[in-house]
Image (cartoon, rainbow, N blue to C red; front, side):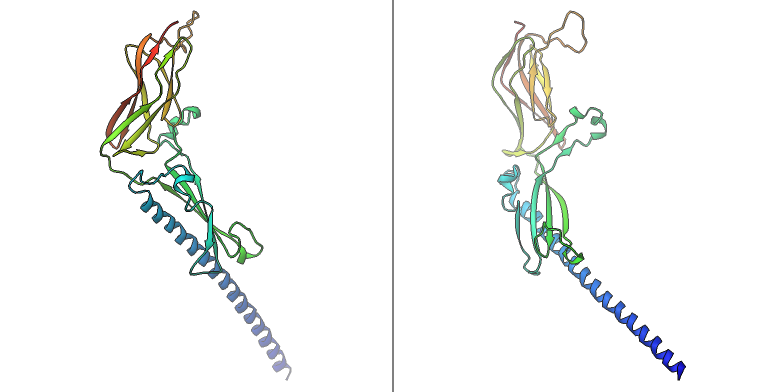
Length: 266
């Protein structure tokens, strides 16, 4: 009789443990399913944004890719409820993303000279949760899912490439600088964002070109040699010249000239 009673208590304890383990497994299975649904909604929303960008921004220039307020107003800071999972809410955030030159390991030695691309790439973040997508609730069921990707300006055919340089004619005296000159690369009349340009002055005068980190604009400076022979100060030959921007895009070299610059010593 005693052995039977002990066996019954052992069985009862075993069933209790098994029941609690089974209940815990069902609970965590529900949490995993809920999180998987959130991930599924976030991934589907990212694919929707990618497909939208390909359809809207192709051909390049048909709809502005930059700035965000112009080309991304359909998605930036937009939120909603998923059609297949009405208990799940989502929010899309679009931000500018800076890409640095592929030669960054060489250019990073001088951080001020490191070239960067500021307009051709956007960072898209999708936040998903059962309530407010940006809220961080207590408990695993209320844990938000955040997925981020980068979307760039669509590719473009390299036909009818042109470089245009804008700015005003200028006169520069010793130690002075010109206004800023801007270069734009276009294909079939549509702007290609963030190409790198090499600047020079062309003509019977030479000025010092001061390029920006993005490479799309520069100023011309008239430096003179000081009496102590400082090697950092460069001669600028007086006369007339024009700023020339050169761009190499997918193997094609394209140049464009700006307005006339008069460099004078006095």
